Length: 137
Image 1 (cartoon, rainbow, N blue to C red):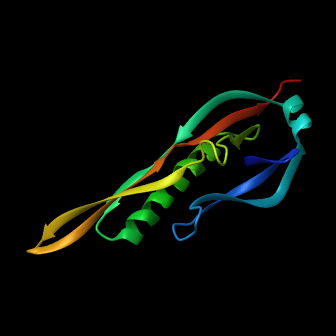
Image 2 (image 1 turned 180 degrees about the horizontal axis):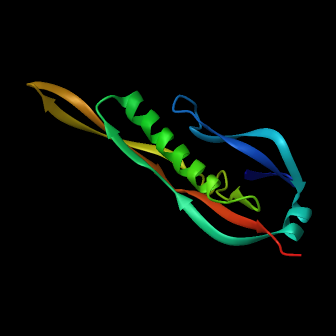
């Protein structure tokens, strides 16, 4: 399960990574779980913190950016799957401070005698996630 803090509670979210959106790396509340911040802090302990990022490249801009979003989502899903029943991921990147954004660089290349563009995409800064487990007892 992935949680994100909204006001005075942590709520479950699902990735909403869309290369065509203004904020490409976003999360959408799925309303399946909610816990007040105080209860979360009393019930869970942080056991690790990790960051995930992705890089892709290609000669078609949309395809390269979509591949970037897919790679980032795949890494996030792998982390979530490895947690087990008692673990949760918490999105710790803060909007306006260190929230991840997609970045790109274009390079001119010559393909069969014609000028073309080649695209490099990456996420910067990385998406920061806390790994939490239910406290014993």
